[in-house]
Image (cartoon, rainbow, N blue to C red; front, side, top):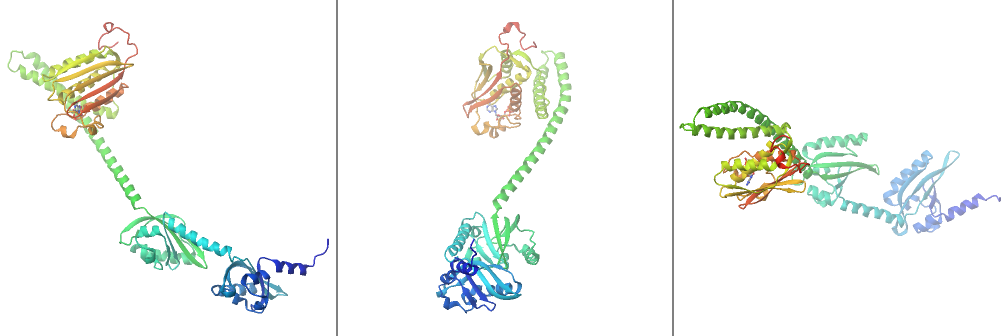
Length: 506
Ligand code: ADP
């Protein structure tokens, strides 16, 4: 291979390089500048050779350039620098590259600069960066504030205007601390800044913290704050991302308040249940004795005697009291999951007919009409289902004082039995129907007119649920109410009714 003439080839490289190359002596006089350098800056060779390189550097960068040049001469090193050349007619040429020094026999001979020409492309690039930054600041969903290490505000985006109430032009150059930091945190903030500038340690940097801030109108509000610090030209810049979390906080407080209220009402409920269970047990003991005495009295007083009527009326009231106490006891048992069910097979129509017959004895104002009572065998607790029917019938009488009829129907619907009890009374408005089966619920505007405790439907609901059935209501205010319940029928329906002991155990 033919040996290359390096001088010739290096000159070729120097002449044809697209990079800007210059050599200058240790005092800064230009020794050589390649065509790319001359063309980019717009000078001829004659105009630059022997001239001070600094006169071709933009005044803003001369000090820095000189500082780096002295550095490479002193330490025989190379530095990467970004700066601007000053072309003919004052043109600014953005450039970056490296500055080094050539040594011979331990002596600095000349400095060498090899730079890229960013004249067009990168000037645009920087402008683009700036406009991209502006776009970002304008559209950022958080408040973005940029401040220098003196805490002077350099950027304040539209969201910051919305969050803090200050327009950007009011705060530019102002002290960040005076603008947004509440008075009681300013000292700590100043100390923190001092510490950071001395040590580079910033415990609040690069994480999101919850803190309070000051609004233009003087009110203090909660924010999420995250700050990052970047160093530019030996100066720290702080970029803060801030979001106002007032509404979030309010929501949290609301949730906490609600939870506290819920807990309180739960505790109160527990106390009520405890009381209910204790009170109903306590009431039952004297009631049992009272009932026994009245029974003895009623058998020992003959119907002709004057006091017989009172004894018999006392007996009726005692039965009512007993039912009330038993219902209360049931409520506390349901809560404790202690209701015992005795399940067996029975003819439901018999139970229904009996209930209607007994209820009819208690009312002279209403006629209870059984429209249909299909013979159906059920598997369940007949006494508990009796309790449901009695409750619905007594409600139908109670809540229809101006009516005279109650219609009862019981029929097969596939594998279910559908029972309905219809009255023509005061009805129930739609908004009151949802809570009807809740414990102690009573429709408010009726509660003072009609006696009751609001537990009958609650118990009925539980009983029907325990029989795998469902219960619901249809009603029209001032027109009347129909309660329905549906229960699954027993499997062996083809047993003839007469073969079975009605309402008895099988
Ligand atoms: P109570 O009748 O002792 O208040 P219930 O649990 O049996 O308790 O009934 C709950 C509430 O439902 C009643 O207070 C009443 O407002 C309403 N309600 C129940 N049955 C009827 C009905 N047939 N007509 C109108 N309202 C009724």
